[in-house]
Image 1 (cartoon, rainbow, N blue to C red):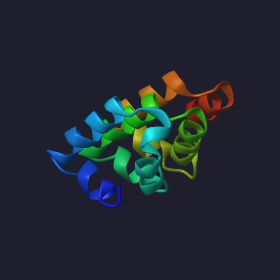
Image 2: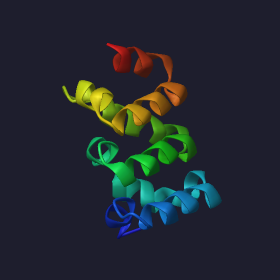
Image 3: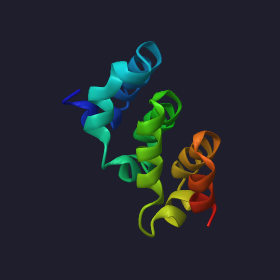
Length: 108
């Protein structure tokens, strides 16, 4: 988990991270979730890591999902995310898993 940030940005490492999230969903990947926290917006804008962020949003426990979506909603970068080649896929996934108040923030 200490190399999670490097792996998610790697052309091959991102597949390993996605596989880990599929095989050990939920609490089993807490070390990975904790390592990526605070970087979700940045990672959502990148080609390889955006795939992992999508998977995170689907596989993380509900409290962690909310925290990740809160990161996406924070500040004034949401429009950059929506207009990004890769970030708009992350926003789409976030809208699928977000609770109603977060959906409202994402859409505003």
